[in-house]
Image (cartoon, each protein chain N blue to C red):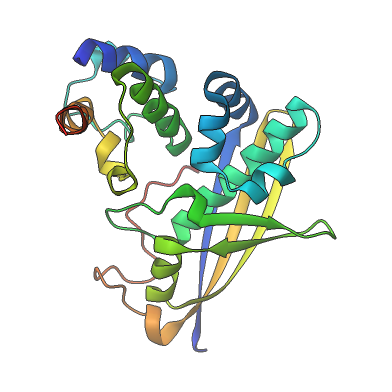
Amino acid sequence: MDEAIRTILAEHGHLPVDVEKLRDEDDLYQAGMTSHASVNVMLALEDEFDIEFPEPMLRKSTFESVAAIRIAISELAGA
Amino acid sequence: MSSGTAIRVGSDVLSVQHVADSVARFGDRYLQRVFTEHEICSATGSPPERAARLAARFAAKEATIKVLRPVGHQPDWRSIEVQRHAEGWCTMSLSGHAADLAEQAGITDLAVSLTHEADVAAAVVVALCDRTVSEVEHNGIPVGFTERKEKA
């Protein structure tokens, strides 16, 4: 799952740093991900994992790190 | 300021190409998760012109979030609407959680200015707040300070 998340972040996150060098807990917003980029990341994650992020999960914290994204996907995939 | 009114200002800038890429990649799913029907209908013109207008509207939404200063739950993008009037000027309209945040902050009026040029779109939002409500926010952060990262 982590590899797919990092691939999506590299393609849609518009991060000015190498995604592979980010640790799982590193803050993606501090690393340079914008709110608009996070929308694209969300939509790409929905496509990749066949899920839909419900409105209550549309928190900044849901997409703030690789680890946070992994937890969110696990919650949705197990729902 | 000695009056009973406080002011908050938010701004945002966005690459028009990023919005064009999002429309090309995700199509209606992107548009409908972010923009209201009114905003989609208001963003007329050629594909580049449409992307520029959508980018300016997204920048206005983000600028509005900066004045609302949410902690935790972010408002739905569609609950922050740019309303274009027939004369050409725009105003902001809030609903749902965004409207609740504005009420909590004592925001009594919002003004917005949109612009786009070549590959850049930007917006500035000014909020007037009732100082008696907004002097200290519910989370204890005094007016004039925000935890939200803002790019210069």
